Image (cartoon, rainbow, N blue to C red):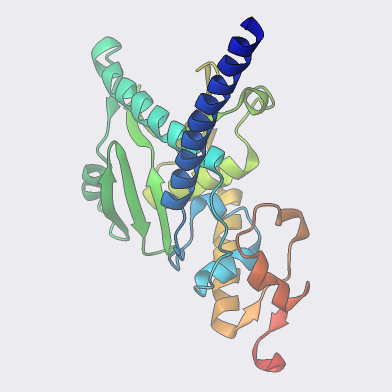
Length: 266
């Protein structure tokens, strides 16, 4: 009798677990569907992609359709957590003026007007971040923050990372430097404070980065090269070391590995 009751209890628990697991599965399915769309990136440069393959930049600039791949549910969660931490950290930075007296949070739109930056437009204000468009570089980006700290202006760039990545570098990552250099070129502020946070334990570290002229030249040359390719219908050669996370693999496969000229291959 006891064994029968034990077996019945196990069966009931299994049924309960099935309901709970089905609930989780339905939740994951919903998250995936809510983050899947036919979005085609705008035909403008993004600082986060400027270090990527020039062929990928070319496809974005001609409006090619990216691969239809659903976002990983885990990646969606990581991005959402990063956004949440950005907002909290930005609020604390604003409160530094009260507690330390040496940091002032700067409204980016006011700064643009004050400095008379005609080729930089404010698209929108999302929380404490400002979405901007540079007509000169044809570049769209989000500015995490701008502060006046100890007598100087600094762009604030916030990054959240896993414990492994957080402990693997003692300066900003090369791609992050290029990204920040784009901000600097557009806003006209030469110095960037990187604030890295370990997303597992909220430990923090900072790096000051002053954008070198050579890096600005490199970015300008990349943009000029891709623009020229677009103007002449020339698909840039494939950069195999930058293929890992490319969203244009499907369209890229049509053109081989070398430079491809549309007009001569019709």
